[in-house]
Length: 349
Image (tube, rainbow, N blue to C red; front, top):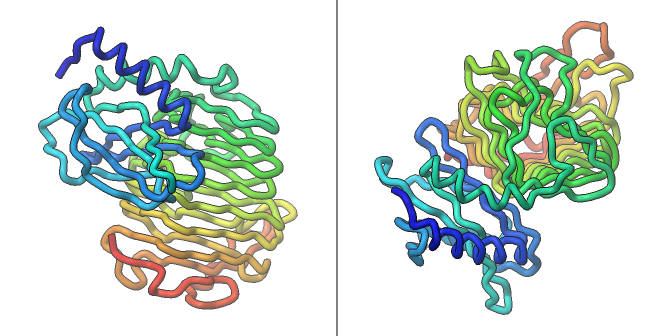
């Protein structure tokens, strides 16, 4: 399906003006017959969000979902697999003002065309290997990456954040390296799509690392080798927070691991999960070290084909120092000081 270029230019201009004004940037991810929308929004007082699907770019479209203000991803499970669509997000605030995202498309050539203007407007500081300090960098849907040497330790970070925010970025399938590092201070990763995780998706070496929305895929025999953890947490007296309907697809070892055998290991480390969708095969959700007083607080977690114990949700370990072997697994825990989660907080997807 192709669109008239003159019409497209006008609509692109208008939609991008809306997107920049409202800071509502929409990205689309397709893998294994899944179509997942992911977006960023910094608007205040939003009361609802609406997802629109369109047959042509100029259509008003059909509203296919109404979402809560906090959600930042949506999977279209009702689309015809043989038809290309355009998508748009509308956010409505408590004064009934509507903020409109850019358009995105399931047609690869159209999607490339639609995102060109967004990427052109992206920050010059959004590039593989960048070190970002004390600021927000908006990549506007840009794809970046380094390389991927399997699941080998010690790979470089694609982005290194020092008390900074990065948003609206794709980490390329063969360029994931060691993902994004929060190296110091408070870091936010908003609307990040990992096309195929390499070593880890992101590592917390700072004070607080917050993941808002976004999608992470990992293939069983992909560039990153054997499926492993998604988020690594190394720094002590610090927090990792995952929210906004962050979505996992593919196959993974764990969503989160508090470091089991770091140099000068210790704690406490804090994990907060509130609104996460695991549409994937996974070994367990969170691994924490009870002897270091780690705490995982888990709410509103949805897991594909979940039943109690499969997968394990909060697993307690004994943390050790580097060189002392492997961190011993104690087992899955519920409603403890370390594992602040009850079975009512987890449901089948």
